[in-house]
Image (cartoon, rainbow, N blue to C red; front, side, top):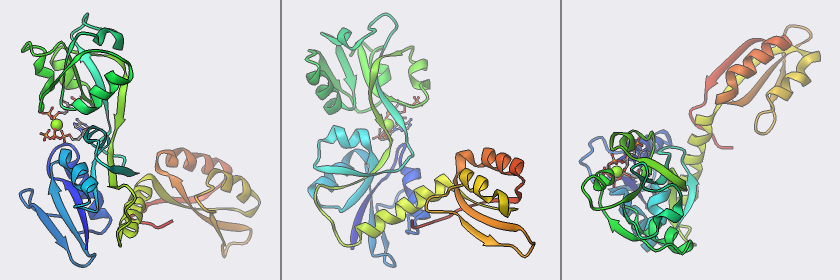
Length: 280
Ligand SMILES: Nc1ncnc2c1ncn2[C@@H]1O[C@H](COP(=O)(O)OP(=O)(O)OP(=O)(O)O)[C@@H](O)[C@H]1O
Ligand SMILES: O=P(O)(O)OC[C@H]1O[C@H](OP(=O)(O)OP(=O)(O)O)[C@H](O)[C@@H]1O
Ligand SMILES: [Mg+2]
């Protein structure tokens, strides 16, 4: 039985359960549930604090998990990022009141509040900057107003939390984070490959649409150049003389533009449909 860790709350929790559900796994129906058994797929899910997930996976207690890249790096657990999941994107950055600091060198001698003390300490050590790190559990933005810190290092998505605290980012982006699947270094438990392939299938299905169209045979090469697909487009004869039907996967973000260009080439009956799952 494969044992998988899933965030029980916070920014990654819902998106993690959604991708697992789309991959065909049973997920809890009540946010108070601590575990969920999926006997059909031989998997058990454990709903844990996102911060603790890398530890369980690194220790080998659980086979894999979904967490944030920033939390994985902060934990220094012996777990590896094995798949980027594309949700929960954020940047980890320094911020302060305007006028406090403009570059990372200005961090010298400052008090830096953060929930990610591992990431911050390593960042400072790599650059030989001496500063004190104040470890807080959350709501880090308020620490400056309360006089506990001069600078914060925290997760920024839209920036609205920083703005409402009157803070501005400075320096380079410390790290870019997103939800990731993690596994234990060097371990390959039975069933993990299928689990990974299912998640990859959902990611591809989310990124692509299926496009079908009819086009005159003499223009098919130009059309196929617009829709090369992943392997190769399928070209089938049509009953109508001199025409063919083409079927190909197209990146969702480009679909409307590709449809316009195909139409200009003379393609007709251009249809796009969602892909729900795939194995490439
Ligand atoms: N606003 C956000 N947008 C995107 N990702 C976020 C955001 N806030 C947090 N994250 C990401 O979510 C992960 C865990 O943070 P989250 O806030 O969910 O956990 P937590 O702080 O332990 O829980 P909670 O905030 O519920 O107490 C991290 O990987 C972080 O980068
Ligand atoms: O840039 P924004 O879109 O404003 O999002 C970033 C905020 O979201 C998270 O806070 P969360 O709600 O998880 O509270 P926490 O700090 O107590 O964890 C994070 O810690 C930031 O405070
Ligand atoms: Mg949080």
